[in-house]
Length: 146
Image (cartoon, rainbow, N blue to C red):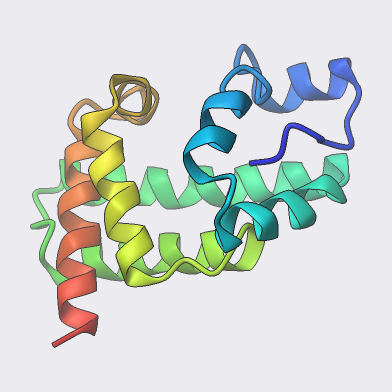
């Protein structure tokens, strides 16, 4: 997302803890800077207030917590519960950042397990959650394209 967040340093620390959104911005811009998703996310997020970011992160955390609960309960990643949560995750990204197509969503799921930074962050909620996310996202995309 955009490094041009409309937040003070104190608000960033409060909202994102030890994560600095600017830290990976050059890498993200190099990878996705020419895409519509990048320009949409940059435009949208640059106007978000502290309250917007609080709601965004709360919604994302809620989806992750419910997906972790599903995983711990033994619900299969390709079952309705996990796929419905994956769809909710995709819709959350579309609502807040950019139009998250099923193709983009699958690429995100793959990145969750191929990039150790994402894996570590997601697995901090529950060990194995990144792989479960990926499997649920993939199954949901296949269900939608069937």
